[in-house]
Image (cartoon, rainbow, N blue to C red; front, side, top):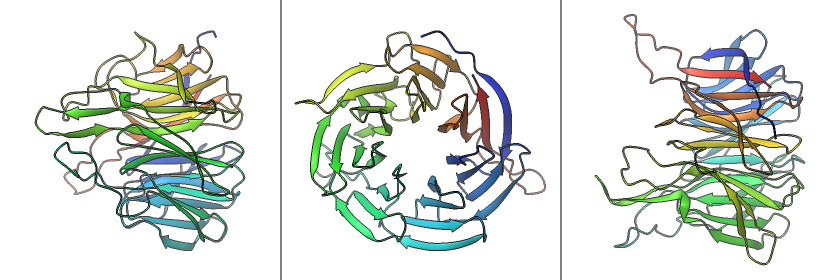
Length: 353
């Protein structure tokens, strides 16, 4: 596939660092989950307003129809908000610990949210067994708890297949489990140790894990994103890493990963597949190298475009026209000026290609 040129067409600063974002079907606006609340952002004018807050950071956002949004946060809650009436419709506590990640099924029937706290369980610092179910499945319409599914904490990434029948979840240790949403059965399970590290400098613990995942358009492959092994837990100097796994055969098999020479160092926090499935985007933090957001050809795995954004990328979303991609994140640490006001440290950018 030929190289792609990315051109920044719009950029916006927000009052708070961005952890999640979702774009409306007509690409006119985005709903953005931040450290200090949920914001509605006009993608033409840049006008924004804070809609509501969770009790802690907002970790995930999804559009539910054209007028409602669903969010989850580090308070372990899921909330439904109506944009037409500007009112909170429902709030529901679903985890005792954080909601690390949430996905809404393509048919908008299911919500999947994952949780878990890494607490050493033995002399090898293996995680303790889960204190609560690591995966919760809810009805998106009513909030009814449909299923509670097991994993090994902490579980930091979740995805639902294009046909809305499967849920995949990945954890700190690089273990992936795929469940059937209709009956709750486990259909696949494997571990890729490339996404986890054993810290031997400054502390002894496991580090990293799978931070984002997406199914391929046919549902037979699963893309994983995170960071390769590192020794120093304070450095964040593991390899910028993605892997593509074919899980539907007799045994799950890795078919591709970040190519040699294509990656620097840094934690990758988001991955998304283009609507045509021709390529995918991955983004995150830059520790060393020349990019922290890049496009990759879906079949060959070649890097076809890259950006050095100057800020931490926490969310990447393709717009419906397939000709644009939105990147969002946090460009600095919050600081107060002489008047006691914090700087705008959230960032949203739109690129065309």
